[in-house]
Amino acid sequence: MTDGGYYVHNNLWNAASYPGTKGTTQVCSYHSWNHIGTATNNGDGAVKTYPNVHKDYSGRTISSFSKLTSTFAATSPGTGIYDVAYDLWLNGVPNDEVMIWTDNQKQVPAGSRFATGVSLGGHSWDVYATSGNGYIAFVPSNGARLTSGTVDIKAMLSYLVAQGRVASSSTVDQICYGVEIVDTGGSPATWNFTDFSITDS
Image (cartoon, rainbow, N blue to C red):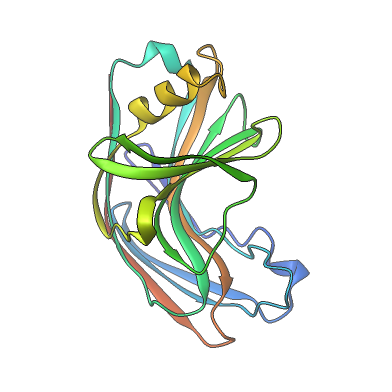
């Protein structure tokens, strides 16, 4: 479904590799939708699905944004293994990945933590990266769970540029918000998304 340049995507990208994985997305609008997912962790911790809402950009560079913020709100089941998160694709889709986790249930980001308690956009973050910075994740510090609010994506990308993790000439090609599901204990679990918007200039 597309609505005002936003797309809701029932993205079951890895489900075929894990029999029994299911996902149904029910949509009212890009800022009002839910997902009912079923998955079982077989021990490898793999993400099975990433249902999301997203907006595409046409190769716009980080440095060209004077403002890039987003509002969000989501409620989660609190069982199993998952992360509710933004997923930003830089320099093509898919290519370099920057995630901003807002809620985390027993999920662990890839890579190693290189910073703790970084204050950006009114929230405190721990920041992880893989070797070569192909994957970077901002995770709320001290196990915080952000069920609604605003993230300052421009400030976070500017921080990564200042840290030498991302080039200022990198392009922002897609901004997603959804849930990475690893495990629901084999039973259906529901995530409700009740706010999402992006403001840019």
